[in-house]
Image 1: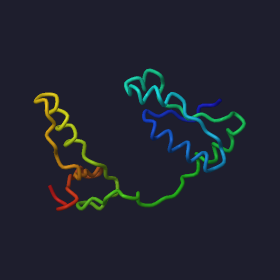
Image 2: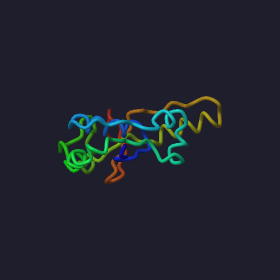
Image 3: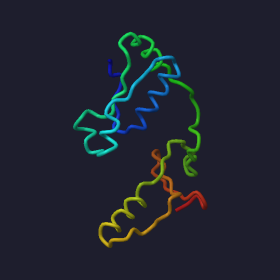
Length: 131
């Protein structure tokens, strides 16, 4: 077996596995259950590995070099300030909720629809587009 790539999250490894299998290369995921059991082991064991048979190496290289479908990511909002599509859910509300759980024993719930632009660092709410 030949390791094609390693990831810290099993979801990312499965995305590559699906891409390889769609191109006709059987792929296997190693150490997925260990990382799901305790994600801190991910760095210690080298992450979640995507492996293929050595005979399929040339075909896998072709698939990995293909950029795939280009375009705007589906479901990702556009930044209202700079019109960038490089956006992600804001982690601050989740972190504050976790901190309140640790300090007060109960989680204070915050808005889950807050987004942050990676390009201009602007944060907004889906409903009113501004924060």
